[in-house]
Image 1 (cartoon, helix red, strand yellow):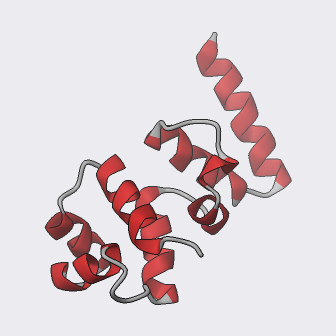
Image 2 (cartoon, one colour):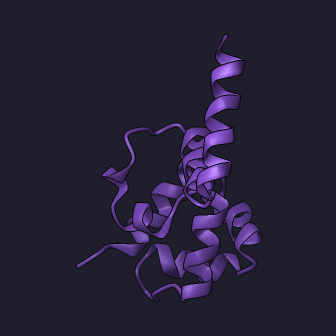
Length: 102
């Protein structure tokens, strides 16, 4: 069975956030976040989506942390944003990255 509490706690800590700070970003109470992290309650889909948005990961990455090869939160966020681009936008992003690497 998937351990929501452990995964959410790991993500919060990777953001270097306290429960209070993370709860504010998610628009839930610190008490509810604590209950989620301690597996007393399961997060709603809207809270789960907000967690992914705040941490810059996809739902797939939430459930399968190994689906990305980095622990760098900025790179994870960039990958999540790039996944939402259409082919033309992705091509432009690749060109831009190549230019700034020079």
